[in-house]
Length: 395
Image 1 (spheres, rainbow, N blue to C red):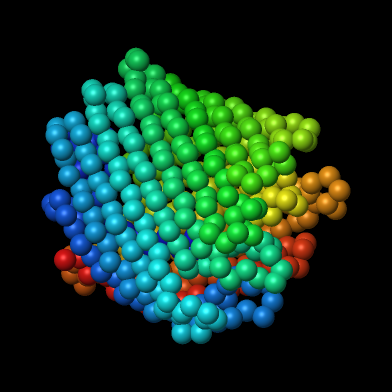
Image 2: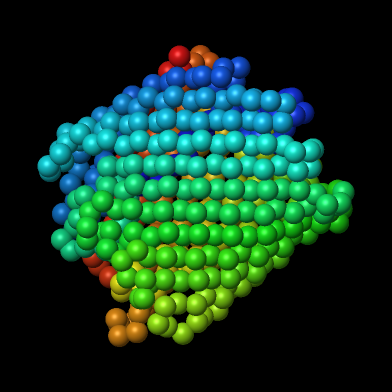
């Protein structure tokens, strides 16, 4: 699984046909084409290719990545899309195998039964040999084979019983499968989520919202120790002050039962704000508090994470767009009984990118990313910088 990188922007345009308004927009370069083929090539310098706490290995990385996309309306009510995205990375200075292969395959179908009733189903499979995941602390000495295959299935059914009331039933199933036996014994698992949410229009720009979710985390090799079952309850509002400013707020609680351990209750919070200050330019900020799985479940029950972020995109000219992101996550690793005290762990991820669009079919991106983890356990520390240049052509 690749490390988190700055989300380099892609220009999107809406689909104008009323029958397709329920579907997510597709990239501008793919508009008007059922089949779209692109090729990306790039060069990146990575100061810590394995995410090691000590003695990092740096390398130049050469990447080539084609992408085959299919987007089509099968009928006035049904839209289908799929992608095949293989990637070949060559590391100039990597112990062992220098060329590693990854691929992503996804498909999505959305069907509108009526203007207010939509079923949206998607599935995404990923196979990634590039061991840049932030799996800090999984093994000492560092495990250099973090090859991961994963699959995520999502389904949403939205409908509106009345003009003011909207309901969404949803389900998600994610499977993580690390190829390495030692990592797999710790981390291979299913995460299944089921939920029901509603929104009620109080004012034209204000909706009240509520949600219930149930999550099962089922580890494959030590379920008696690691499995978790969580119920989430939350309420809040969505606010849209015209086309430029929008905000969302949720506050609630999580009730979690754990295998062989006492149950626990924790707060849950989400907040986000987005302001589109000019065409193609915006700033968004947000905060979440949640319980998350850790990269060392045999030692820690979970990780209590405060996540604060800011994203900025600015369109300097019709052909040049800059973007930047900053993510700061002060958190607490909650130790299992007999495994010692809890530990603080702060993570910072930052990045900037500049995108140049000389023509409709060409895009050129230069980027810089910084990752840092400062943990109460020194073997979980991480420091990494990456900068690169890539170009993509859509045929």
